[in-house]
Image 1: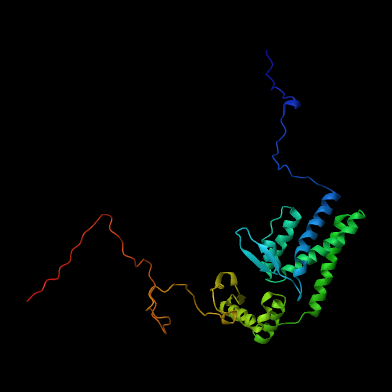
Image 2: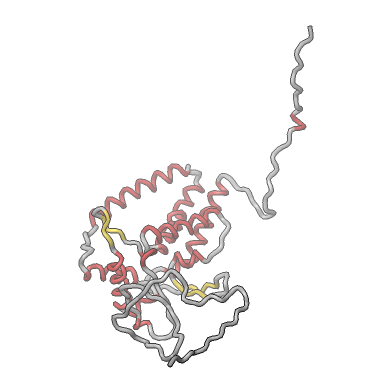
Length: 276
């Protein structure tokens, strides 16, 4: 009898290790060095927009990739135009974007606050304190802050225009449009009132889908207003056309009005026949 053949063993030396293709500038950091590097990256992002916070804030002049010039003091708008490669810096930018989508305001404050919280935690890391201990302390501080906010919070009636205008003025107090007074505040309030709908006993406000800001060259900012309807930009084809039509009749077509050219060359002759 012959014994069954055993599978051949592959020597450990012949097994190939996985090959990783990385950039030449790639660095691998771990431990305390990586933690301090994350804090420095977060501080750098916070320092960029630190001067855009408050009533005496300054505007940032940014050149976008398409060659356009952007001047703003909005934190999310500034960080959106910045290209960073550090993971911690990307997390800070993502934090600003989330704040803008969920709340709509406070994009600069949240970045400055996050940068300061990491700066305060840096001495504790240098003293070899475990990061988990620092995180638990921040969680306790968060609970205390939420309890304090619940005590000093004031209920706001969303149907009262006077109260809502005061809230809007607070939000726009540090923006570039604050010099135009209540004009922008009234426009913002009217636009939100127009698109507010009630679904299942809850108010839903979707300004990203139902509100559009149309910029028209020429004129003054004081001429801006909210249109209760749809604005369609259409050029005047003939100078004799009316510039204003009151109570017009509108027809909606799903086919073009242009005539179709024939597939082949066609000659047509028309004659007028008189009948006696």
